[in-house]
Amino acid sequence: MTDLAALTTAVRQFAHERDWEQFQDPKSLVLALTGEVGEVAELLQWVRAEEVVERFSTPERRARIGDELADVLLYLVRLADVLGVDLGAAGEAKLARNHERFPVAGDDSVVGVAPHKA
Amino acid sequence: MTDLAALTTAVRQFAHERDWEQFQDPKSLVLALTGEVGEVAELLQWVRAEEVVERFSTPERRARIGDELADVLLYLVRLADVLGVDLGAAGEAKLARNHERFPVAGDDSVVGVAPHKA
Amino acid sequence: MTDLAALTTAVRQFAHERDWEQFQDPKSLVLALTGEVGEVAELLQWVRAEEVVERFSTPERRARIGDELADVLLYLVRLADVLGVDLGAAGEAKLARNHERFPVAGDDSVVGVAPHKA
Amino acid sequence: MTDLAALTTAVRQFAHERDWEQFQDPKSLVLALTGEVGEVAELLQWVRAEEVVERFSTPERRARIGDELADVLLYLVRLADVLGVDLGAAGEAKLARNHERFPVAGDDSVVGVAPHKA
Image 1 (spheres, rainbow over the protein chains, first blue to last red):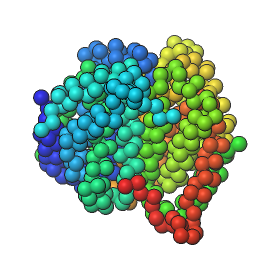
Image 2: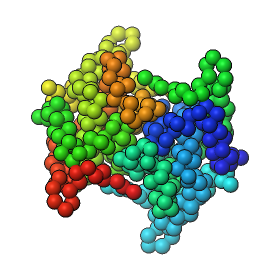
Image 3: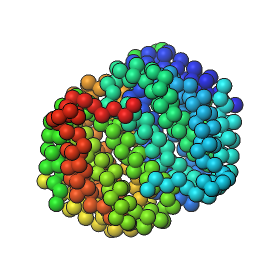
């Protein structure tokens, strides 16, 4: 069980103890988030799509990519906190809205249909 | 209180009900994550660093950026799930390791010092 | 024929005429670059890897993704200019170095072998 | 003088000689692009906005960030090529269109006004 609110408090305190709030303005945190997403991308960019899950199923590789996903999470949590956003509530609200936007029955059912943009 | 494990299950079920697992391989999910981080970046790219927090403090703008941060969270949660990574545990483990890497006392104290890469 | 130096001058003048240099500091430009890469990602995230090239081979879709790639290029050119980097020279130098790093003959030949990171 | 078309040919040949076309589908290349933009972001994320240009004005640091910008350029050039997009033409066309979208005179003049999204 990992509560996002508790994690938010822990990450906030981590920054505070190091006097790092001065560096962690939202733009800098989005850059940090970009950097970490980039590291995730680099880990799997040249692996064939259908082989990624198996490739990262060894303990070492799973820990490696888990480590990068953790960095993304920590910066995301910190960014939301600095912006005064309740990340957990926002995530739950968005998922609820997605349930309405993408119905599973009826004429506009999206079952098996990807929402392409172009 | 938002438990990451419960959110993971909810997002997994959302994908399953729509038969979207077929589209959500890890590479596609990293691209989706990139897209959502890009939307966050676009919201604040031209705002002066010292004005971002105030600018996004109105209910409408906070909801707007919260909505984008929620998208990042949902794809991150889904990506970790598809890769078999326990995101909450990974986040907590990384934060614990960061406490060791960046000490707040002693000769290598990082208090007030940003970890520049260049 | 598109000369990167000429394009750099044109983009610089475009910013100058609009008095936009004040917004185009490097960090803001990297955020803009992130936003545009994100838009490219969104266009193809749910398309199967082996179907992307065909999907974007119609004139409309090719123009659509070309438009997003153009945005990436323009911000990249501007970012390099603001940082005093000769982008064309840097690109050519990097390509030359890559020729040395990734030999096509001998024991360390990389022919047909992707440089995986994990 | 660096011609984008000539650079495109050189990068294509580089991939061909190494038999790397098999890895360089568009989705993989967007991930690679994301990775390189992430490396640029990491270089300047904790530097104060008004100090970035000076910080990267030393020969070593300029070369360092120029090297990362070069990686972004090379993957962008390759991605456009794989998609059949004439990147230079697309960039010039977009810049021409931007001249129309953002007029410098009249009631809708954008001089000194950043195009905020929220």
